[in-house]
Amino acid sequence: MENSILNLKPSNVWKHFYELTQIPRPSGHGEKITAFIENFGKKLGLETIRDAANNICIRKPATPGYENRQTIILQSHLDMVPQANSNIQFDFTKDPIQAYVDGDWVKAKGTTLGADNGIGVATTMAILEATDLKHGPLEGLFTTDEETGMYGALAIRPGFIKGKIMLNLDSELDGELYIGCAGGADVTAQFQYKDEEWIPKEDVAIKVSLTGLKGGHSGVDIHLGRANANKLMFRFLKDALSTYDIRLSSVSGGSLRNAIPREAFAVIVVDGKEKYKRIEEMVAGYEELFRKEFEGIEDKIEFKTEFIDVTPEIKLIPKDIQTRLIHAITSCPNNVINYFAEIPDTVETSINMAIVQSSKGLCEIKFLARSSSESKKKAICSSIESVFTLAKADFVETSNSYPGWDPNPKSAILSVMENVFEKQRGEKPKVEVMHAGLECGIILSNVPGLDTVSFGPTIKFPHSPDEKVEIATVQKFWDYLTAILK
Image (cartoon, rainbow, N blue to C red; front, side, top):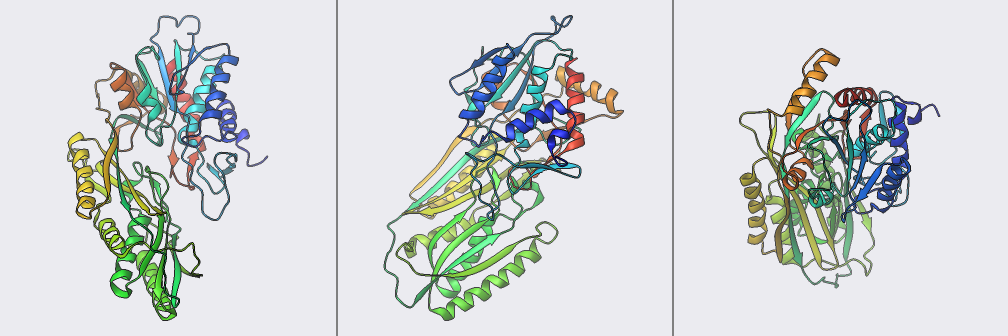
């Protein structure tokens, strides 16, 4: 039990976080966690309601003497990003997260930890359960499917929540208060084709694997310059196409729109074992090149080849399609597009080439665009659409657009939070605008007039198996939040 998170302080928060690690809750599979939170509220004897999108609101009355205070909404999302290292077997719909203490941090064994946004959920649960805190009326708002499209937030309607002040508990850097965030949109392109089944007997198949990249959150980590596995794989494929006239059988890279892809795999076919040796040498050369280019940013890049048998399952993407696909993906913009002119270190617009997946006559490419500027968000989406239109893709669409959150520097709750922070720590907090998407903008568009600030403890590398939460900042987060409520 030495490395158990149950030994950590504040014990009430870590107790509930441990419970969350035992309940599978990847995006799109929220049945168990929703039922758990609903039962939690009812067992406490608190008013607990669920809407059509399975969002949960739990209302707790004010403590004596605080009845006339304004109602505070504590908002967090229930789902987590399901990312695991390729060398472990893990089913996010069944298996519990294996969280452990590593020095000053809590991590998970080979998977995402779910501190994003499990720490926010656990903290709200601890406050709803507590009998020794002083606060006005509270609403715990637990939303669904934030990570895949903020679908729970999109469904919030006036009346479901009654408070006029909302504290979003989904930020990831201690000492920073967020008063605005970027909006986002999905872009999807598809190439449809009929697989070619005939492969000459002398041809050989090669599996090319790019692994070991850090990945990360496509909003929080996009400015770090990390490698995008899809972009690197197709950079190699373009060279291999022009040099050795390869045939592409399949490609697979990335799994979630809001995660920078850490791995990419391709199966290619070449005419003869001599070309296999040359491809092997080319891959080794690219591995050395990628390591050099990303020195100081990435530290585990592995680019390898594997000879595989030509079985009936291996089919070929038609030459015309593979050429258009490779050139389109190679030419697409990716990563940071621009920074705020008035806030030079803050990203304004970015694009993440998140997923490239081929199977059974269909290759699908998925992007997530983010921007604090609605017009620039539309512009980058239009740019991606143009690339695939010129490549004669069979389908190109921008969808699931959601608004950003416009900053309000004159927020009344922000003023309170700044004063409390300064009294507790003897310094001012940083007030920032976040490039990652938060649910605040969407909820504000559905329930106008909310006074909102987002904050949280320090969480590093969310959306990747390297995710970790800094233990000391969870205690600071608890102390700060409970002081704000008082």
